[in-house]
Length: 65
Image (tube, rainbow, N blue to C red):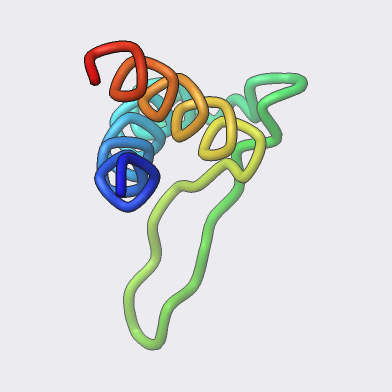
């Protein structure tokens, strides 16, 4: 159940950090920030950052149990 709660937190963390770093045109090195096209919308995204953020949120939620 904690993992289900951690995924939206990972998405929010990823979106905010990718927006801050990617808005300058940087790819963030190992973060590999790129434009993700969803239909007519485009947003900055990073899969490595999403996995790390979700793992961090999941770990914090498990520790609070």
